[in-house]
Length: 252
View 1 (spheres, rainbow, N blue to C red):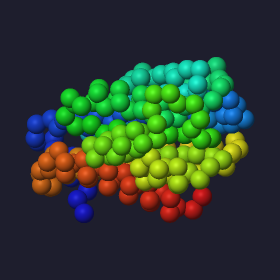
View 2 (view 1 turned 45 degrees about the horizontal axis):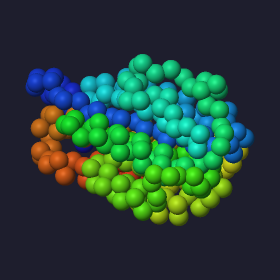
View 3 (view 1 turned 90 degrees about the horizontal axis):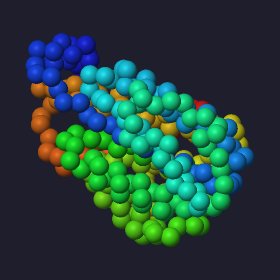
View 4 (view 1 turned 135 degrees about the vertical axis):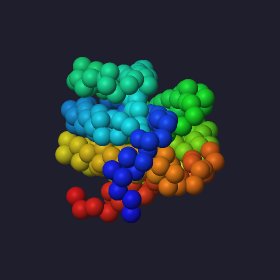
């Protein structure tokens, strides 16, 4: 196994590598029932944000990180952060996240993913890491239905995007599968359960970012064969799935 320090020494003698642009997208339910776990959701997102900041510092040679936080209810879909460089973000405050109304999950996903796809399509090397967090089932969408969202997710996974679905009060694996999302977690509808699940998502991200950086360093050092765009997308998806599976196997 090649040590990362050795790879860094090799890369330093070559032209500067192009960094992977990593777009971290969190789609967070803000319907009324989330009030019971409101504090945990805010704290959990801030833990995720801290993990992304850590990744930016640790993998600064290979990755640039951006953050999008979309909160949604039937009253409003709000972009708290929208493709914001992680260094320019701030911790989420309680007043930023005030649950109300019902759950237009399909609309929140469809609108957010479509806009993000339009934005990143001209960027040469991107990874989009999407986490959906909800405590209930879809019940209020007007623009998108489940079939349309499922087809969109399938296309995006083919473009190297990664998805994790985290749900309470439902069979998250079944719901995720209906949306063509492989990686799913149930979480207990409590402060502790919400924090634990969101903490695991942060660990999974860091695991994936570590794998991503190692891949990039080996490419830049000439230790890996060049890949086509399609091969790169497939590799990104596989690395994300491996990171998820590894974290799921760890003891809580």
